[in-house]
Length: 319
Image 1 (cartoon, rainbow, N blue to C red):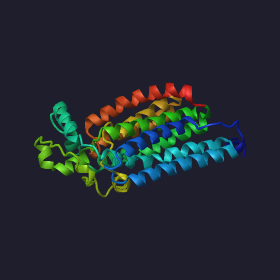
Image 2: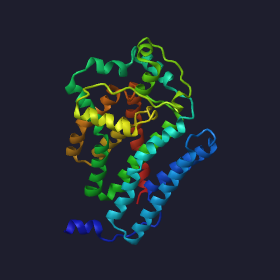
Image 3: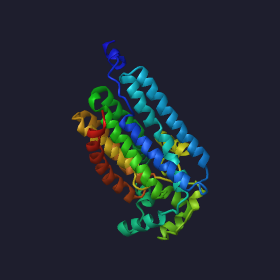
Image 4: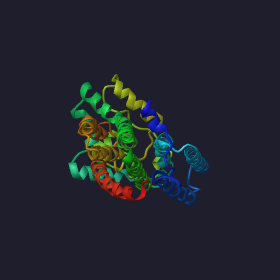
C-alpha cells in the first residue's frame, strides 16, 4: 500500500512542458514546415496536419491532468503517451520521404563494394534452419519489450533519472526519424522486391526514383513460416511496416541506447538479461531483410553517439 501511495502522492509540479514533450514539439514543428513547403506534392497533407493537431491536443490534455494531480503516475502518463505515439510517427516518415527520390541503389552498391555480395540476400540462405530463424525473429520481436523494460525500470527503481532516460530514448527515436525523412532508403525487403532477386544477384542496382511513392510491396520474411515469432514479425510488418526508415537501423541504434542505459543503471542483471536479445536483434535486422548490413553498423555507431550526446543534454534540460 505504501508503494502505491508513493506513485499517487502529490509532488511539486513542473510548470511547463517536460523535456520529452519539447522534443516532440520540435519534431512536430520541423515536419509541419516540411509538409507545408511540399504541400502540393504530399499525398495526405490534411491527414498529416490533422494528426499533428491531435498530438498537440493529447499533450495539452495530459499536461492539464498533471497540473490537477501532480504525482509520479500522472508524470509517467505524460511520458508514456509520447512513447506510445512513436508507433504513429514511424509510418508518418514515409508520408514525407516518399516525395523524394529513393536512394537504395546507392546503398546496395556500397554494400556490394564493401562485402562483395549482399548480406541480406545470403544470410538466411547460409542459416536456413527453423531454430535459427525463430531466434532471429525472437530478437527482432524483442525490440519494443526491451524499450518497455528499460523505461519501466528507471521509473520504478531510478525515478530520479526516469525523465533523463525517457528523454534519451525519445530523443534518439526522433533523431532517427529526421534522418529517415531526408535519407529515403527503404531497405532490402522493399528494394529487392521492386528490382527482382535475379538482378540483385547479378549486382544490378537500378535507380527507382520515386517508385515507392505509390508502391509498398515487400518480400515475405525468410525463415520458418510456421514459427510463432515468424508469424508475429510478419503480422507486425503487415500492420505498420512502410518503405521507409532503413538507414541507419533504428532497431540497432535504439537498442544500443537501451543497452547503454542499462549499463548506466549499474544493475548488471538488467544488462545480462537484455544482452542475448540485443545480439539477436542486431543480426536479425539483416537476416529478415529489413536492413542492409551497413544500416546495422551505422545504427550501432549512431546509437553510441546519440546516447552520450543526449544523456549529457538531459542533465541540463530534465527536471
